[in-house]
Length: 223
Image (tube, rainbow, N blue to C red; front, side, top):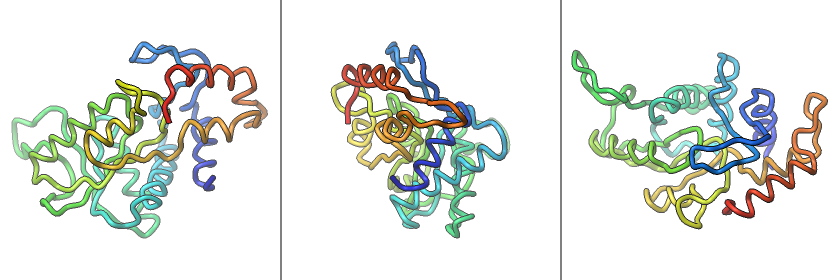
């Protein structure tokens, strides 16, 4: 496992953004784990988050793109901090995000940030993907604003769960949109790294919790 991935997993735990227990998800599934990227709630945390997103973006796309797009609302700080993380790595790119509500005065554009052309190459960033609704809405917004090229999508964690069918939810979105989707880490990597590992004096995933996760994935999991 790459160093930035193991560091990111420990970062998720330290920020309480990755929790284990019993959580009822929007889908109605009762999961033994939950990911809440809203816990990156300080300047230092969001800055570090951008560092990890930037590493994932460059790992998969190098510098072969022009900007980072984030769907409102959670994608707004993500696209900005990712662009900052890239700049710190010597890859200076643009960023932009959409407005949920159109302005009725001055600049009435539905987008905020870098200018677009049909040749602009974008990487979309988001926290996690469940149904892909926000991403699909973003694609439509972009089509109506110069129709730039979407090269791919990067999210924080691939939960490796089924979507509406038997396929991995990320794979479903990738097939529907025709673009690759990558995650900084997968649930399998999280399980492997954290099993019986002490962080700040506490074992995050013991044998009992690992069994609960595996039982859940036997029902809802998809590689």
